[in-house]
Image (tube, one colour):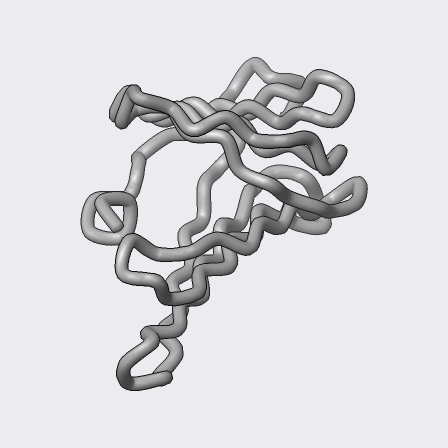
Length: 114
């Protein structure tokens, strides 16, 4: 929930086969796995392994909130590849009222983008 209150000002994505690693400027790291492997529960609050699926331009995870609600996180490239959209959709167990948040990150200079 911390990332909803204080989103990162920058993200770094790297891909290794069926693993997408996300490092945030706040020191938090997430590993998204798309191969169905058994995830390890981390003792470190700054690292998390998450099951995901997607295609060439989207990565989607379905997670649970700390209070048992549903959270879906989608990372998607803009059509021109110069921005990354992060969309978070949450559903609270008690009220069943959904909430949606969208963050837009610009590609850094020097990464192959103009």
